[in-house]
Length: 422
Ligand code: AMP
Ligand code: MG
Image (cartoon, rainbow, N blue to C red; front, top):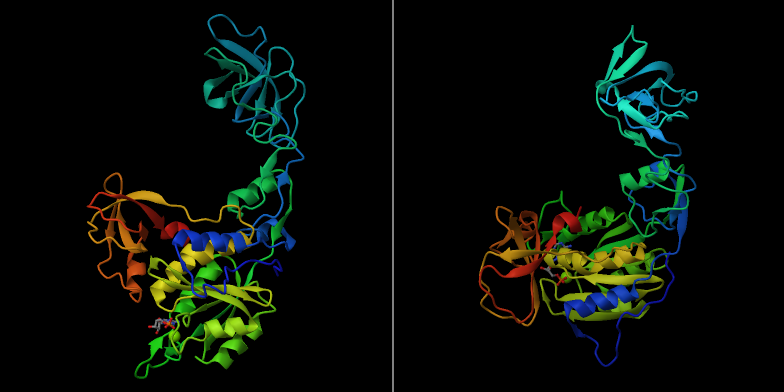
């Protein structure tokens, strides 16, 4: 559990601040304090966890000079090498990986295999394809000039003693775990998973698998939110649908507030009579309802209940996902202790005109056409915040700045779903 304090931007004079997208993200990121609760895990259990401390190497890797090829180890300074470049050596040893050979004497060669230590007295390895066996396989003949250190992987070539091989704050990938193993580390200190409690407001919501009565809809946010949180490696405590009353909302918050690092909800963050999130959170903690100058997803609630941060996402399914990806996800990543928590963008070209300037930032669902450079963004024809198909169709979000018009070919920021929802 993260017990650090944070500022939710509450201000008596501005109960519903109108914020730019950048300002909202800035407040959130300043408020998110990395968790300081760590655990040691074995390498097999470390994948996707956030590394809590730098990993140093106590050894050189490789820790001895070794052969990069199956071949023959010889000594270049040996006077067997003649001017024409031809040379021959008597085979006196056989060194396989995991064994060590004898000191190589002048005029001799050691049969050597990949990964085996270079014997004393040798300083180059000729690959077997370049050697002819002669005199009943007792000698090798080489027909080309030889150079020093051919096919030798020197001690410390990859890693040297005291090198920092992994930095804290990374999300451990298969290659990271392998690198730790390569220096003999068998367990890693990682941050504990963040616990996120969720519930969903709306009397119209029905769980999939049941029939819909008039006026009812299926609860899709429950599935996007839980999946998004699982994707981030959070432990999710899901209370499901909660009735649109102040009492039920307070009850749900009370169940989660002492146990969770974050509580998240969808819906009920407007200021209608059926929207109880604000009053409920304020009665138990503190909360600001933000109106963010963006589309989709204007309303967002941010606050604190007990020791848990509170993020109330809008109810419309597209708004809920977009605000999660743009605001909640970087916030959660920072709490998880990740160094790289902000979204990354690339530049793509609009394949459409934008004639009406708007005072808010828009995030259009677009599909990317990579057949030309720069890639072109085509927008889904229906951009309503209720049109969930638009997100399934799209490759990501195209950011249209505030107060802008342009014609086709404008370079704009693109947020890839592949990166945001790997
Ligand atoms: P609200 O913010 O509660 O006024 O909800 C805004 C819109 O989102 C309404 O049309 C709701 O029916 C819809 N909505 C709210 N919660 C969900 C949900 N969990 N799944 C799908 N749609 C929802
Ligand atoms: Mg509602």
